[in-house]
Length: 256
Image (tube, rainbow, N blue to C red; front, side, top):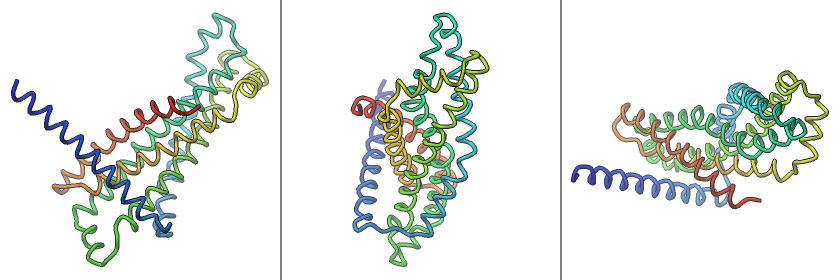
């Protein structure tokens, strides 16, 4: 029993330490952006690596997510003959929840983990200390461009993913339910408002910030060489997933 409580206390202290470190890093990023400035070459490089190279996997995932919604809803639609609600139900779920969350988790697994590994390797090989020795602020030079690039990339990927998911849902609705495209279109347009789209887009920007800060923190906090880098990547992915789900809860409650 004593060992159990010791492990619980140690885990609680670790969580509090990481949460405090993430908050401190977020404050340092805000301070480094006043006045607004970032390394243009580093920003463009990260934007290409995090955004452009993530488009194929996001498109593939979003397409089949939309198709899955159509297939899963086919049973209820046929039973209750609720074909007029298919476009509204699918669009509402995709724009507000499935699109932002699913793409954020995919983004975290691909981009966040890679960012943690890259920064962790730089920390373990003392490249970060080298920047400080050259009077270069690693927060302003490395972290700020990555944070801004991740927020913009996830924002754009969510827009693309929403459109692809809606297309996949419409295609499989026409195949599985034999519905007309016009029925799906008017069900979507007549029952959804621009706020439903903005709801998911705001979430994606916040998720991008959370993934960026957590991945950068665990990368900069690496200790123990290659083994430490592996542990940091694992911790960053878990922390980002938990952050996305917690933020989704609060944003869903607060946003209209």
